[in-house]
Amino acid sequence: MRETQRRCVTASDYESFLSHRFGSVIQAVQCFTDKDKPGYAFISVKPKSGLRLTSVQKEDMQNYLAKYNLAPITPSILDPNYLYVVQKIKVTYDISKLVESEEWLRGKVISSVDQYYNDNVEIFNKSFSKSKMLTYVDNADVSIIGSSATIQLLREVDNYFSAPMSGLHFLNQVAPRSVVSSGFLYTNAAGESYNVRYASTDADSSGNAKIVIGPFADGDISIAAYTGSNFDKYPGETRTKYYEVGYIEHYNDFISFDLGVLNVPAERFSAAYIELTATPLEETIFTRDGSLIVFENDLRPQYTSLTMNPISQ
Image (cartoon, rainbow, N blue to C red):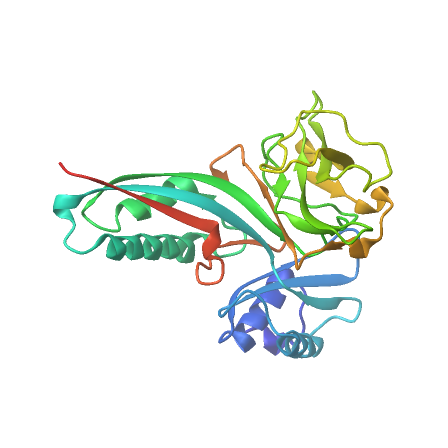
């Protein structure tokens, strides 16, 4: 064990020290650096229970590492930057071969998906493969004839008013016009509230696209409205005004937005967080630098939908 050296030198040292001391609570750990923040060792930790460490646990880990840390480097314990796969799975099964109920089979399928993530995905620097996941689904029970799935990528964004200077990233190439957010509340000066959302436009030949937000009611926003129609409007809404608030560089995997350009108080918008989704161009999904793909169906059941298709052969 490197503790005998009484120092952390490499990224693997930090990971080994924490895994050895806090193995009972750590599921996955990764140490990485940021060229824009020299002097820091960032350690991303996924707990075995839930998605985030408590502040006390983070403090305990940092205090522990301080005993072995080289003076110029400051260790910083972070929550992983979670990347979720929103999956819509369709399972076709033979009724004559199913010895239990359909609800039982649904449970078996969900358990097989969970097992796939545990075995292959919920580890830093590992990838998600749709075809490999479906192999687990197909093997869940002898009654299953086959399965299919569509996938999207999802980021949970706490600061929905403006993106960080470093941008938001899906770490994978995503389709133009596919980046949209969940709805969040806007309250106008008259006290009337309604939902708006972000949406991305088609990309130009350089892979660049715009981020717009809306729909707003006439007169609620004073700047010039976006007049293009090259994006997917919020379904079911009769309001018509959208405004350009950001951009996407698809080839660089860079997303930026800032609601400050609307010239309205930040408190007019409200949400605990927003869900930003996009359609990947490939069926194998990769991560890096503190990002982690997780399933966590108990905590995020809304990210997996399952359609059962019974047939008789």
